[in-house]
Image 1 (cartoon, rainbow, N blue to C red):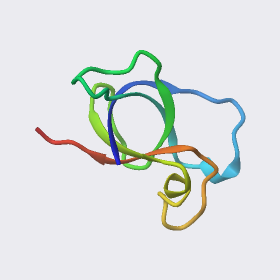
Image 2: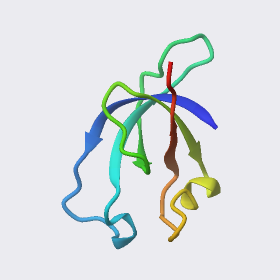
Image 3: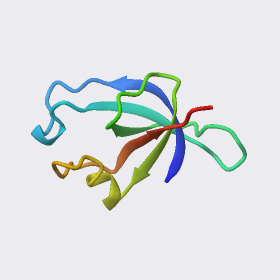
Image 4: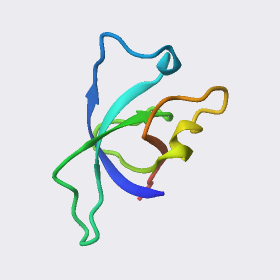
Amino acid sequence: MKLGRVCGTIVATVKDHAFDGLRLRLIQPATGNGGWAANPIVAVDTLGTREGDTVIWISAREATLAVTDRVIPTDAAIVGIVDF
């Protein structure tokens, strides 16, 4: 699991049916020195996050299993919201 910050929303006119009902979010991964990476990544939002939220995200095979009722073709998924 990794930390990141939601910095935007991705709008796709055409996407795989496995993403039905899910939003795509732009997140900036946390760096080791307490900052945020300059290059954001796209992650599937399984929780309903808002811009500016600090989140926990997963990648690789675990991300494809982030939604319990189906397998989604993704490399990153948001699975938690950090509450300060």
